[in-house]
Length: 116
Image (cartoon, rainbow, N blue to C red; front, top):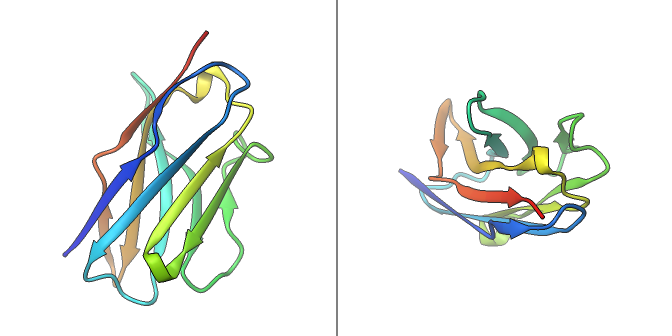
């Protein structure tokens, strides 16, 4: 089993920045893919960014490119999401996901609210 715990959410003004963190613990394999998803009220969950443990190119959704950056620390089993130039439409619950050996694991999410 793998457990994921997100942190770093909160209230921020438009144009501000936040850094989300996700710690994976338990049976984490050397090869995995860790991702950030978000779900806004009344909307479906969507992929924000993803990165594998092998250091291949990370991917970011078009809506966050040039503003958000995913990064990993494999030694610590951590994944981060640096969010800059935040907009009200970025308001959502942000979830961490780990995929390995055909299994999915999800965290409980952290709320990001962008509002003045």
